[in-house]
Amino acid sequence: MVFHTNMLPFFVIAGIIGGTYLGYIFRQSNRSLVNGAALGGIAGLLGPWILMTPLQSCTFEPERTSTDFVLGLFFFFLGMVTLVWMAQYASMFFHPNPKLRPSMGGGDSRGMFRSNMLVPILLLLPTLIILAMFLYYPAYETFRLATFRYRLGAPRVPFKCVDNFTELLTPDYGEIMMVTVSLSALIVIFALIISLGIAYLAYQPVKGASIYRTLLIWPYAISPPVAGIIFFVMFDPVAGVIDHLTTTIFNAGIPAWSQNANFARFIIVAASVWKILGYDILFYIAGLQTVPKDMIEAAAIDGANGWQRFRYVVVPLLSPITFFLIITNLTYAFFETYGTIDYLTRGGPTGSTNTAIYNIMITAKEDKWLGRAAAQSVVLFVMVIAITVWQFRTSGKQVNYGA
Image (tube, rainbow, N blue to C red):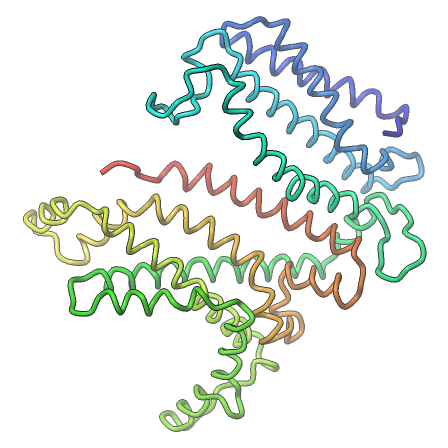
């Protein structure tokens, strides 16, 4: 890592913050304050060093703009916070009080290793090596690639520092992120509501229920591009079946999504919801099988009607599955809708369906700017992580895991 003199005060601050924080944590848990301060100080210094290495500390160069400097500080202290947190978590495995160490068995003594920590670590080592090779190292390389002016076919690959990131601070990219968030939110909301309603109806004791449930799950086996093709054929304004039905019944055809932004968004949301619906129904049907029937019967005896039993008994008991599906549906909406958008609208009209993942693929495949695409993928990854953490902090506290 290249060291600039103006980085020294920030390294001192990072070391002091890391040492003070872990020293306080160690002191609160009746451990050595000196050991905690030393561990926190080292982590506070090492974290920024690791994260600034691929950047070559370029944001601290005197000729850099204030925007570059602020973004560099963000990465600097992000590295500090990440490594200090990892050091805090790792230190709990060596707590002098065995009762306060993290349990490998989730709080249940059954199935736990009663030997030292070396045995489970050795058993996990092959998995950790595979994760490091195929997940963590590619993620690091993506971040490093985002610091270069990398274009396919170009003879030179010059270093760009954080220019690929600062170039995203434009109204156009802000509009792309707004489209991404709005479409993803609509996909998640409608997918959960519709799948829960269908699953509740399919769970009722009717003849041939197993056949209905199997047919409802089938759409999940279809890839997003195929879902896009199906909805393209259905909603084609010239020869589509939906246009034919609306013209026959209402004497009015559907608008062309290539000219109507709102209708284009509706098509993308509808195709994406239909694609993920089978997955959500599968989990909701499994969750409904765990709902105690005596609680529903007790609510009926107390005078609750069908809607009240569903709203105040069934839905709260399904909250763990709903919370899980929110996270998985968000991941799907952010990362797996490229094929659907590409076959239906190609981001149009006028960018109304141009999401972050679609823009990344266009930048990499058609424009061949791999460095810019890598920077956009880092931004999208950080945004999804932030939303996921926010979900755990808010919705996760409202999940009811007990009957």
